[in-house]
Amino acid sequence: MALTVLATLVAVIAVGALVVVLADRSREPVAQETGAAVDPSVPVLGGAPPTGLELDDRGTSVGLTWVDPAKRKASFIITMAKRGEQLKAVGHVGPGKVAFVEYGLNANLDYCFAVVAVYSAEQMSSSVQECTNRGTTRPQR
Image 1 (spheres, rainbow, N blue to C red):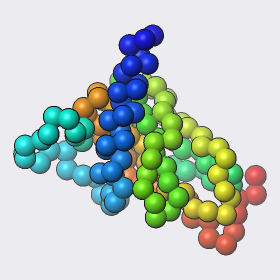
Image 2 (cartoon, rainbow, N blue to C red; image 1 turned 60 degrees about the horizontal axis):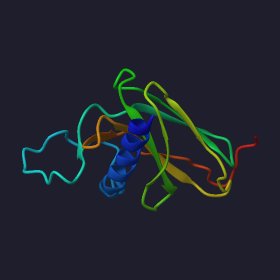
Image 3 (cartoon, one colour; image 1 turned 30 degrees about the horizontal axis):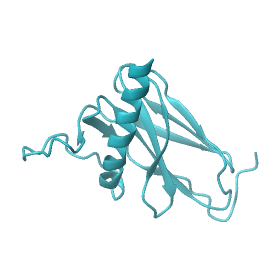
Image 4 (cartoon, rainbow, N blue to C red; image 1 turned 90 degrees about the horizontal axis):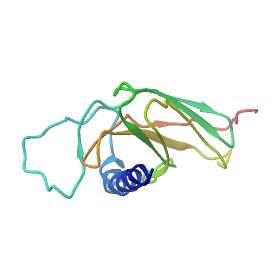
């Protein structure tokens, strides 16, 4: 149990550094390897990214679902921000879980989400970013 908590804590800290890299990420996956020297203290992209990220906009909450590329062998960190802001970790789920709901949102604002597969404290890979598109109408739920 203590090892699981410690591993999760290390992964969340590492994702903090990774989120900076993902903030301006386009809709195309980033190359997995560059061949350049890598600072061992910085997480690198590695492993297959989560795919098929779908948002279920419920107004004050948004449900997320995705496809697990690791076949139940990686945990996932959910990142979120208001449209145009830097993504930040808002939650995590364990291996095999492919759904998450973020509550307490402003129904008048758009939010962007990405899901990061955590293969180890040093290897992670992010889905493409998906955003709500509320415009002038709001979901009625």
